[in-house]
Image (cartoon, rainbow, N blue to C red; front, side, top):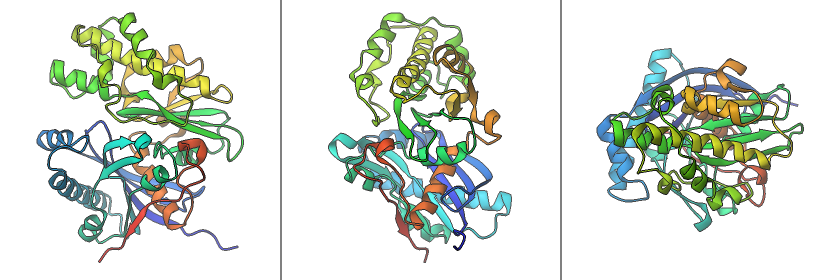
Length: 359
């Protein structure tokens, strides 16, 4: 049997935290071979971040923002290649930016022009990772679980990989190859970041410093946990703003930050009820792993060791989601599924992605 082809791929991710573009190099066969390489983040300027926020939900001049977003992604690809002398690159996995996610209505919308990006970079591009899954009755998210499973390798199982971006999602990985479950747990950093921007002008609560000075409002937390989302069995997914009404507007900046941080931790702990067996270890990736207050809350609540994925697997937790879309792009070219019924709720394993050839 011939060995599977190994692709040299750059993965791109613009997450719901609206902070910038992550670009990561990965050599992979889209299966078990994973060789991470260099990574960088290209932060959004405040002006563009405001424009991007302004088209969430599909409002405003989406076409203009999409064009500029695509040019910024091309700049991220070029910066990664220049800084690290990457040489030949076979493929770009381009997630784009989600501005609307309503899978229950059969709708998901990621802006980003794949054909334009292929033209700008001179590299073949795969984008549109979510549409086929939604068309097959899936949630269209999360799409990182198969990469999580590949990364977990020979770790003792069951293990849970928790990604805390704007929205938080978890992948529970059991003993067998098909023993996997994934879903969005609830808010991640989005509500905390919005609170910080409104009350302090800062885009995030660095290390959870403001939350550490506050007190959690138990009534607000109880109302939050009564949300019907938590009673829905997974797979299930969220839009960034699905919990916007939970923001505790009547609290001080410190108490509000503490309460929102507790909401994220409590929703993660509540997710464990759906695991087939308790996870013996939780690995945390995404920006939330840098929030010390949030990590302390998680350690108190999930009933198992909680580590950053950086420490446990000697990898870069900031790079992981961009790497995942590099991995999925390679799987798309190999005609392999990007999602499973147990990760998105689709009716069957779903292939996806749209290939744009460079001119």
